[in-house]
Length: 418
Image 1 (cartoon, one colour):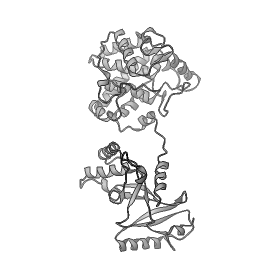
Image 2 (tube, rainbow, N blue to C red):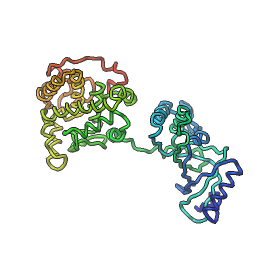
Image 3 (cartoon, rainbow, N blue to C red):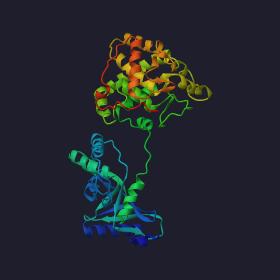
């Protein structure tokens, strides 16, 4: 469809379009924004960037009321916890954050000036007056968080309100189609936990995690950092998220600590660079002892990370507890107790015992009646804790029993995962 049919004003040149837009903005007390004008799905679209201050003033969200009729509102019900989380992220990372584009809607075509021509895509100038209001098709929580963060960062030295966010503006008067646009924009794929752990190094837990993986002879090159589950025939020994469960046990004695609780707990335990480095050093020391002494880790560490010999990992995974996520959590749980002792030689001796005195084969008696039932391995918390207590008893280590469900922010029913 030619742009002229959208009610756009065409000019003989880009300079003429810019001048006309500037004059129109002066006449109405508005502003002229440079934008890209294009068509998508039979509709007129604009792409530009608005400052945070402009977004707060000119963009409105119309969230549905929980329990009410969502069809009468533009947006879904507002999730206040989600808004707080985004706002906290913006405030804490004022000079180092990123926000994805917002998709906005305007129900009538604003004044848009473009150069003359039958272009599928062209540069134009949109004039927006004080009376122009946009609604949010996708991004109402980001918008609310920007407003909340702007209030928190009300400081002359802060440049937050002058920062900008890219926006895509859809010209659409039909509320039903606006709802459909929201549903279409929400067709996103969840990021696998392992990939999120690899990328989100803003979190101290993930920073130490990647250093441990890179520094360990066993883990380096043998961890699947992108998948949601580990294929039976994968030569990788663990998912990154499974190693993260080990690290959570070492730090918090709770692999199931809720994600919302992790930032505060991480800052308490490893909030500084010095604490993170010390934790990585002690964890790598533990991994080195176990890798050199424990079957089949000692064998796997000598294998190449790819090719035919690497496929031996598949067989070891079938026969050894310490080749499963459950085994990693048990090791982490026991190591948490070992790490309480300040005597480095004593800790070394206990790790040697953990590697050599425990029979890690699936059919060993120590696992029967706890995590092993028939040919199945349990992935829930209670059997794993029972198995960990047996391991601690076998190496002469007293277990520190606690009521697991009393651990703040944890889920006593959660499983170890794939």
